[in-house]
Amino acid sequence: MSDWFTLATDMQREIIRAQKAQMDAAQTLLDAGKQVAAVQEAGQKAAEANLSYWKQWAKLWGMR
Picture 1 (cartoon, rainbow, N blue to C red):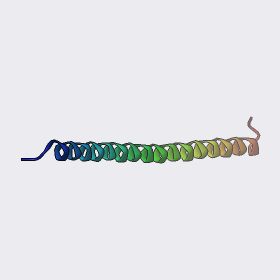
Picture 2 (cartoon, rainbow, N blue to C red; picture 1 turned 180 degrees about the horizontal axis):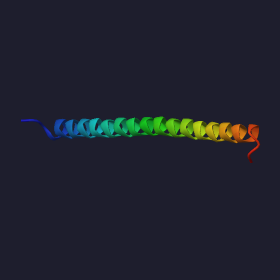
Picture 3 (cartoon, helix red, strand yellow; picture 1 turned 45 degrees about the vertical axis):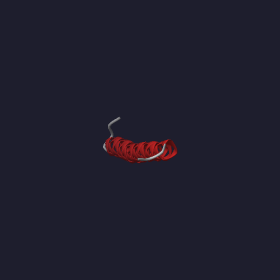
């Protein structure tokens, strides 16, 4: 049978392992969030470029 100190240290080790798993999961979510933000930014730039193109095309043909 284990003594109380061994049980306590084993429990602390398990708590630390669980906290590390939580931190890893949070980091994964943050990384995914950064990727989503990058996609949104690229989409915004593409939409702005598309709008600029159509404005120039309309101006070329005498439209406003």
